Length: 173
Image 1: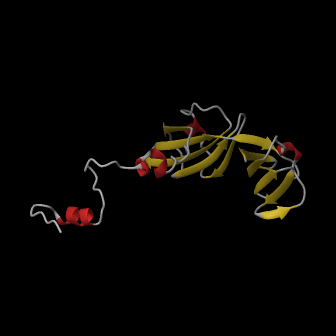
Image 2 (image 1 turned 90 degrees about the vertical axis):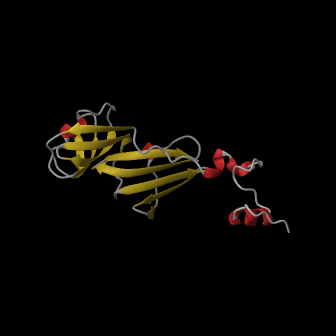
Image 3 (image 1 turned 180 degrees about the horizontal axis):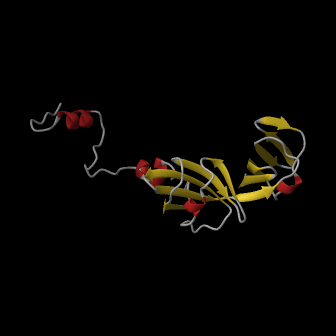
């Protein structure tokens, strides 16, 4: 056993265990590649802005359409929060009061569809190899929604905005 007087304990134990310490000049191996650390998270917002506005409350969640604003949570007077947003509707927005009269507004573009006759508040439609499965509010439902038909294999998820208006997201399989 080789013992070095000025060698720190952690270096001696690593050497005796056959490990290479960082900065020792040894090849770091394939685990040091960027992909091993995982993928970056998808971007949550397409735009984030600050707005100065006299709006009641400290939080707002709403959908901006070409001709209307649908409030999901918060005060009814959120129009002032949309004035500094440059994203073209339709979009989903979440706003938080960060200081007196100062709001941050996160905006995410959405796809909107008009779907009549669909009950519930959310749905998922999966089409794979010609087989279609529809669940509404996490319950299986017989039938399909012709307006949501796409080419190939896909998943369409939707969330009711108002009456027959739905926010949908399509993901190819």
